[in-house]
Image 1 (cartoon, rainbow over the protein chains, first blue to last red):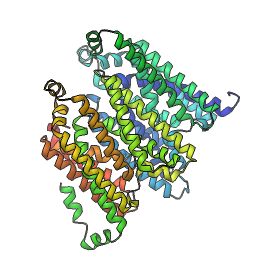
Image 2: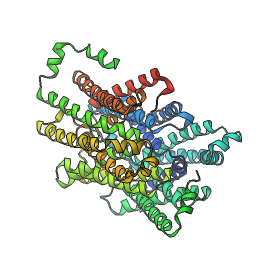
Image 3: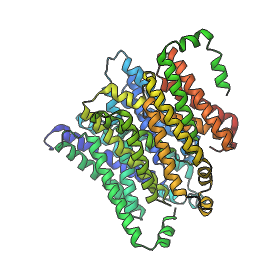
Length: 284
Length: 287
């Protein structure tokens, strides 16, 4: 399988993108910002289409749009943890803009049939060139390092914002900073798995890790490991079953992992006396 | 509502006659009105219950349903309703599993959504990549509505609104204060399931016309604007429906005279109104 260059490229980019998604996703889930991550994925789609419609490099549109919208949502919401209704309203408009750019792009002089739109929506990890893959891996490593660099204070301020603020941690700035890193990850992952499937890599491994481990650091490592594992297994699966698109395979594996973790958590909850369980889960 | 009046005054009588000269446009306006009434009312409850993410997930799940139905050669409407019904059941299952754990609930919703989209992509690629079809599944075919579809839509909307009227009072109670409602003997769990199914139904009916991605615009933005303006349920519901109706009709009218898609105008009008209301009403509102 690895004899093919496109598979080597896919594995190179996929591994690090999944790593960044797993790490960032853990905080996304911990902070209850899955919807914001979802919104950023769609913003990435609109940004890429806007760039395509304007004839600029798609990557530029991706990064500019996600970072700008992340900053805007952070500013609109309270305490840099924007409200779902605010996100939803911004989000709906961004989707409308996406429809506009798609219409301009498809009817534009570029004579394209919308393949680019599909690539943006669902990714094209098997179509990356060696240079693209290296660049994707580098940016993903950079994002992962950023997440790890602020991991300790961010963890503290996510779990107990009041105490963290009392101890002098810049809770608001940390939240906004994390949001910007998330935007970077979203823009990056869009190229690998597509704007619509990004959410799966953010939410499923991290959600499973939260269910499997109560310890934050072990959970963080587990989220990253599960994301990378899902990527590897998904790529291998889509290689052996040609009809299965890579994005679907990766998300399928990640969803299966999440489903198994949920079933395990259920079974444990049954075995444990109920009051203790509810006390334990109110911890945040 | 200043936007509505200002925009209407641009439309001369001649423009209006031109607008309604073609049956497809009349049908689009009729369908838009029905969809707006349904989405405005159900969206108001969705925003009140803070189930925006669930609403978006349901609307996105409509896409694999439609793609799957196309692949299997079934009527697309069946795909929309089947997928949204299944999605509502799945969401109520995962939210029950993660009870008390907000963060893992949203992770579960996200996973359901991503999995649905992955399936949709699989169906589209198995079908042979009908790209224009994909675009209309995601962004809608507002102007291609038949008279038969309008009729069906009307019955669905009447049924959905009738259910909403029956459920309205206990649902409002359960949404505003779940714990007290449960103590008073209101079956909050069943209400939550019923509401998700209702939301799924509204989404499926709307998605057929606006596409999977734009349903959301009609569900969330008018309702959020209305809740900024008034906290009273009756007035808020009426206002939400009114705003949804105004932006849909205006969006259709502007799109008719411009080269850009309806979805863009509808979302831009409703978002503009939301921002204006937020700016004018200040931070005192609810949503």
